[in-house]
Length: 241
Image 1: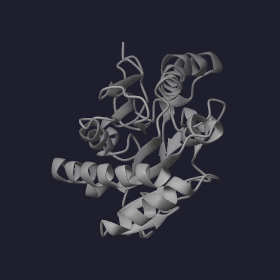
Image 2 (image 1 turned 180 degrees about the vertical axis):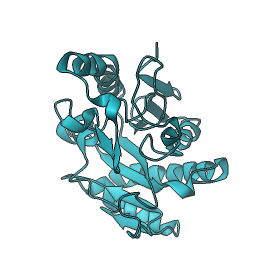
Image 3 (image 1 turned 60 degrees about the vertical axis):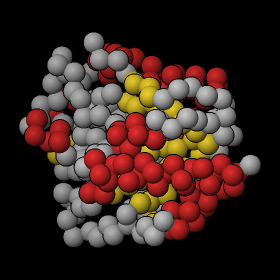
């Protein structure tokens, strides 16, 4: 049976905790989504590239990462459990016919993946008291449903009500000569379930960073961004002290 999360790095108090909701495109064999399996290689299934960025970052002392282990088409961990979209019936114009399930099966899937994952994140926050939480995602350069939309940003920084760490992140990422989106390509005020419940609501310093997927599709880019984010987070920790 698929475990609902993986943890990388050595736990350390007052370090940086990296949370990756959409790290995997895995679909357990007992779940049939009713879609072409080729779609599991696309952005609708997971955040391409960021799992390895988090793993590489977690090789550095003081950095720990927790990664979700199933596709967001199985369960979207960056939602609230009562939201319809937590088990999506469509994504970027694709119908997920296998997710037309009854309430009992829906609750069973949440109990299997969603709740254990979020309980473990909450436990790490409680036990390690991280000085900074990094919620790590990636975004597609182009949506299937709006191919004309331009997404020129190389990274985006998202936040809800708490802005302090994200303002620092924008400053330091721009110093890396990256094209940085402030609440782009979408706003953290719209998509913020995990960062709100696991950080903002309990007063933890956080930022959410989205990397354009073509920048981290291969190992070279993944290692490059791991180094960039390590430098950025180290500066942020100093700035937050």
